[in-house]
Amino acid sequence: MKKNKERSICMSKTVREIALAMGVPANDIIKEKQRIRDEIKRQQITVSKSGNKFVIADNDVKKIIEALQGKENEEDSNLNEEKEELLQKIEELKSRNNKLKEDNQSKTEEINLISSQKDEEIRRLNLKIEKFADDFKDLNDKQLQLNNQQQQLQAKILEQTKQLNDSQQQLLDSAEKSSKLQDKVDKMENASLWQRITRKFE
Image (cartoon, rainbow, N blue to C red; front, side, top):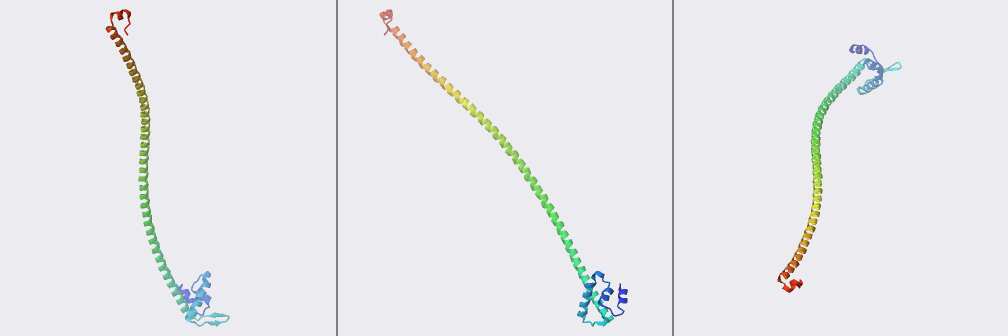
C-alpha cells in the first residue's frame, strides 16, 4: 500500500486523486474529500489550477496524506483504547452478572428453603387443627352423651322420688290404719263384759 501511495504522489493531484491515493473505498470518497479540504485549510496550503481542475503540489500532497494518516492512526489508537475500555467494561459486567447470578441462585435457594419450611409448618399446623377438630367432635359427642345420661338420670330420680313419696304415703296410711286397729284392740282388751257381749266398745 505504501508503494502505491509513493507512485500516486509523483505529480500534482486533485482532491479526489489524493483520496484515491490513500486507498479510500468509493463509498467513502465524498467524506474523505471533505477531510482533505479541511486539512488544506488547516495547513493553509496553496491550491493551483490546472486546466479546469484544482490541484495540489506533490510536497503538499505528501504533507496532507501524512497528516490525515497520522489522524487516522490516532483515531485508530483512540478506537483501540476505547475498544479495550469497552472490553474491560464488558468483562466487569460479566463478572458482576456472574456474581448477581450466584447471589440470585443463593437467594432463590434460601427462599425455596424458607418456603419449604413454611409449607411444612403449615402442614403440621393443619394436622394439629384437624386433630383439635376431631378432639372437639369427640368431646362434643361425649358432652351430648353426658347430657342424655343426665336427663335420663334426672328422669329416673324424679320417678324414684315419686315412688318414694308414694311409699311414704302408703306407710303413713298403713301407720294410721295400724294406729286405728291398735286403738280398737286396746278398747277391746279394756272393754267390760257387757261391752264384749254387746260388742259396743265406744
